[in-house]
Length: 157
Image 1: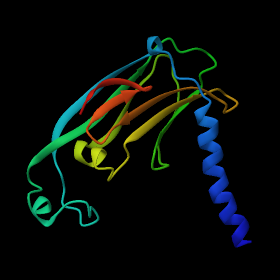
Image 2: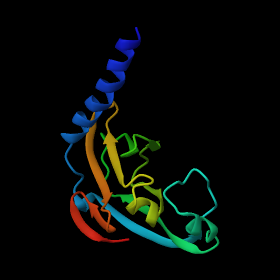
Image 3: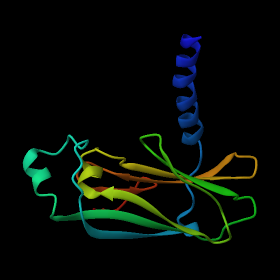
């Protein structure tokens, strides 16, 4: 029983990733994005082991924080729902599309994204009513802060 459960836990995520890999990118004409690059004070968190004692003690300093607004344009009747997945297998948004829609992806502190402490890839998958993926937008950050949208370099954080 435990062996079967382990096999399911391995096979299901890889099946979802392979299904997602065949989904075409959403046309650049059908969406826009606005990068919101602010400064926030990082709260002290003992779970963040990637920071040295010196960095944790300086947590009152404002650090770069990243959010991105995605604006869906030219939506069609068959585009029913979108989900935002991270490379850490988290689903951070799951909503129905209401006409030309927009939403904000809270990505976190820029240093955490670059250092791979938190997610560095965000995939917006658009589904039809039958839950079949129609298209996707993939936002990825490199370790040096380059921002790629659908594999095209779009800037730096």
